Amino acid sequence: MVVEIKDKNLYYVGGVVRDEILGVPSLDTDFCYEGNAIDFARAKGFEIVRENPDFGTVRVLIDNKEVDIASTRTEIYPKKGHLPIVDNIGCALRDDLARRDFTINAMAKNTVTGEIIDYFGGLEDIKNKKIKVLHSDSFIDDPTRIIRALKFAVRFGFKLDDATKKLQDEYLSKINYDMSYHRLKKELKETFNLNNAEVYHNFVKQSIYKLLGPEQAVQPCNFEVIDFIREVNPENIWLVYAGLYNLTRLELTKTEQEIIDNFNLIKNIKPESEYDIYCLFKNCPVESILMYAFAVDFTVVKIFFKSLKNIRLELTGDDICELGIKPGEIYRKIFDYLFEQKILGLLQTKEDELEAVRSKFLCG
Ligand code: ATP
Image (cartoon, rainbow, N blue to C red; front, top):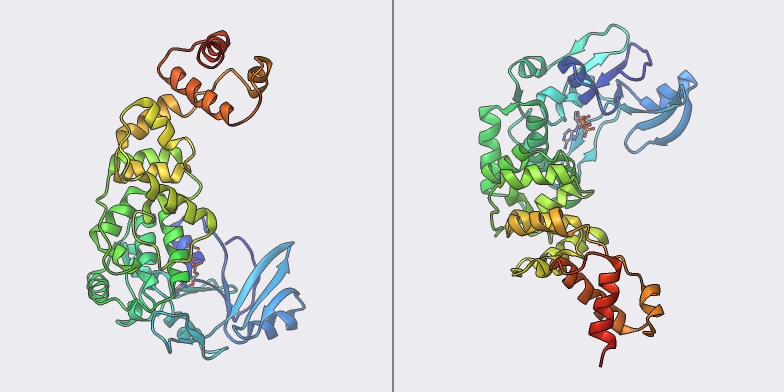
């Protein structure tokens, strides 16, 4: 446990408890106070950074670290698939744990006694490497849990428990598309950012892609390309995978939309020479190129990365100016020509490049 605060009503909760049992490092430490966490933080005299009375959460500063403490709470889903509303702040710990996604994430550990509170069989499921929902409406309340299940299964090498898999299949056969796509996007990002072949394989095999909207065209898993994507490790990894589907329901940032738009621009083009390959990809975001590798043609992308991507000319604009050519549109033509000649292997040195410009653009 990364941060220590002790109180008999204060519990470590969720992922941090799961990770300690699994013996893996935790991404963060979540605390849950059985009662009102804001009142608790004030009574303890903690330095309060921020409080949110609507959710009963408080952020405090302890040993120069910001720590979030949540009140126990229940949640209800008046609109299935959308964010829940907070119902009962300060409820019994058991009721708080019952609102959670999976048994392995529904355990708490008392900060004083160290007792593990496990009402739903999380310990047993960790032992048996199972992801299990807490009730049969779980995916109807929050379909993004299907993506979370995929994430945890791959991260820990777990499997969906049979009944949970059945509930997932049932949900995916009659999806309610009126859902929180903001949440869906967040979970998709986290899950695909694992950049793991098994994530994509199961995303397809279990038909999870259907959550993105009806009438999606399936893009089969391509393990060889996934190895390559892992090697390249681009910034927006998630989009290389999810972008192969119709994402119109997700709110994309400008950069994300550009990646999709660029892929759509190039996906039907088949380059016929190395120079064509160079031209096709030279101004594309790396994610769009990787999508092309996945969905269209890996061979040309390999050629681009191996021998074309880093091609540089020796000549600069100043050198061309010194030849007496006035700056303007002609410079673009000159550089295009030089790149073409260089890719064809006809230019080795700066002098070769100068000579090529002279003979093509200055003679006659
Ligand atoms: P990670 O290590 O990826 O952060 P985590 O379990 O801590 O895993 P968070 O997304 O930080 O995951 O959520 C913290 C806890 O909140 C979870 O352990 C779970 O108990 C609960 N939780 C998160 N998302 C949901 C959800 N969609 N439905 C129900 N409970 C959830």
